[in-house]
Image (cartoon, rainbow, N blue to C red; front, side, top):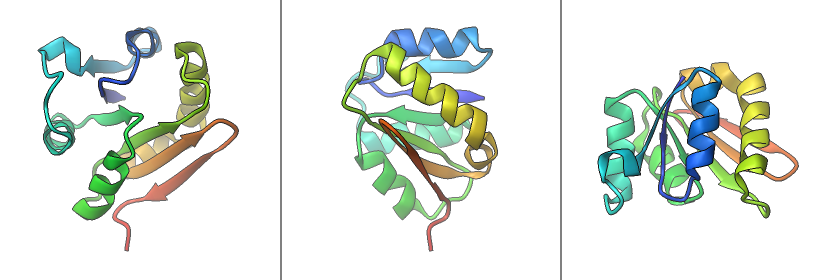
Length: 121
């Protein structure tokens, strides 16, 4: 899978995803630290990447876009260490890969995650 990591996502998470065989870019890779959320979202669409973020705005942007072929994973975790994020990601990727490929917003919480298929009607 192809991912675009927002600024709040640790570089350790990016490296872990790469070891799992995924194509991952972090906004820092392209010096895009200050790019607005809407532009991040459209960059992800153009590059066919799944957005990884801690920012709830991305879920709203995805829902309002009415697009089907985009996915966002929003982390709402108390423990935001890279190891914990990686564990949540591993679970999501093992059980929701099809939803991510088809277009979804996934809200990753500490003990569960919720999948909303896109477009939201």
